[in-house]
Length: 62
Image 1 (cartoon, rainbow, N blue to C red):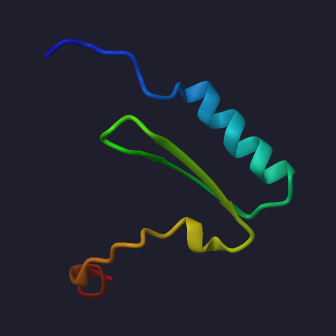
Image 2: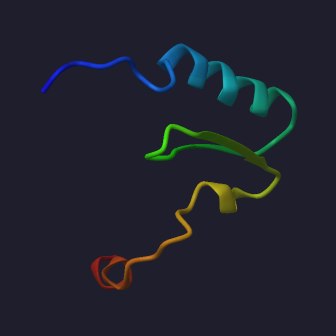
């Protein structure tokens, strides 16, 4: 499999998270979509950290 360029570089992701924290947000999230879109979201609550899709086994394994 050929190596390809990253959709977002690690340094850019770090800058995004650092800027969100400095702006007073408690959580930031980057979503890379299969079609190439990059979605960044920041939130005042920690709900952005948790995944919106839950697995029923997550509760069993805790």
